[in-house]
View (cartoon, rainbow, N blue to C red):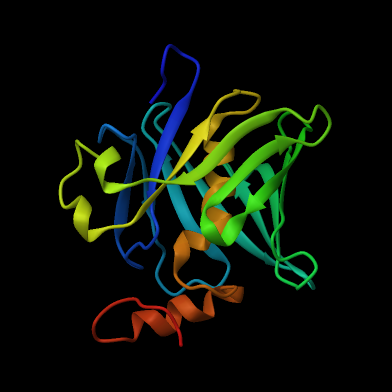
Length: 202
């Protein structure tokens, strides 16, 4: 959703089903994109269908030593962006985005685990987006909102195609299948074997 053509909101659930597809809406409930989960894939995280451009994109896992690494690709398998999320004690609260379309680089500032951080252009130091939790009272137009927990990506500066920032946030939280790094999709494959659907590993 854009307010006076100055901002765009993506509303995401803190916890998604790990099969089929899910809608991503704005805060008024209008569907902006759909995410589709592949079955039993260790290197393919999700497909994203952008309803505005009617294009489909994919996020692929790439293993790293001290970080989780992903690539956003278009339907022709061209790499649009590279994403790295720290998974060590030193880098665990940082994430990095490199756009292959504009050659710009971005990083996060804030608390990734609490869904409270800013996305910053590394060179200009400008804030291009924010991620924050939403309260039930702020979700007036959504059905069954009491059964879900949501956070919001607000894009304020359109330095990039919005789907690039959406993919960045999806990778950061890995659609929140768990509170730990979902390396190689292992936890998702385990979750699919559970008779009652997904849940966090203890």
